Length: 100
Image (cartoon, rainbow, N blue to C red; front, side):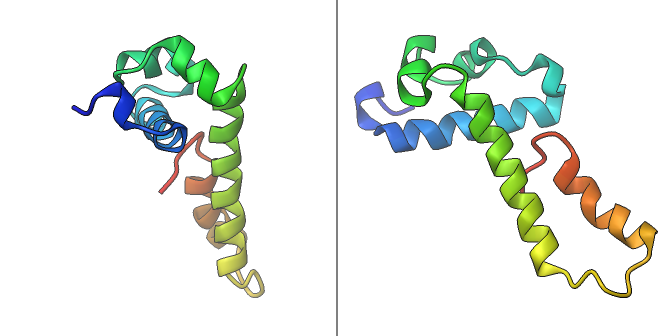
């Protein structure tokens, strides 16, 4: 594993978001905490708060989810789709933190 000083804030941000995504997918959003993210990285809670600010980690994860939803919606022509089709398309994007 890389040394702590080897990573920029941008790299730490990406790593933490990926760890959070994995935790959510495997254990559910109710079990996603900053401490759990910290336990899966080489960084301390203080480092994550320095990089993300107070509570911004979860906001950024939510923003990525919404970005994914927007991408799905703009990639698909919504005309002539049944309710079932729309439900099928929205399910992955609306699952908490189910980012691809």
